[in-house]
Image 1 (cartoon, rainbow, N blue to C red):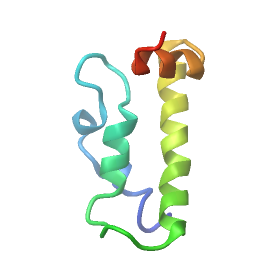
Image 2: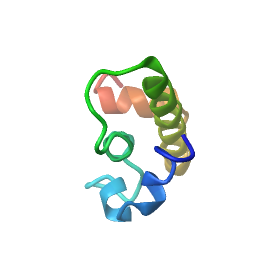
Image 3: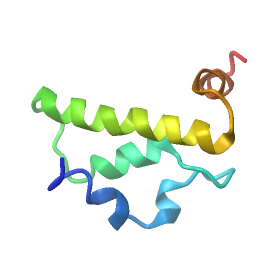
Length: 80
């Protein structure tokens, strides 16, 4: 993680990690950034490592918005 995935986030252009409609993180873009140059398939450790950061980015986005994570996810999903 320290050599492969973690450095990709701070090295990325901050604009590529933000949502297009508001000034907040975009976990989808973060995941894409972390998976840059990774080949499809592979071993489970990669998905667990990236999944850990994925959860942290969703949590950070909810904290920035000032809402509980379940509410943010419900609003994004359209289920209210």
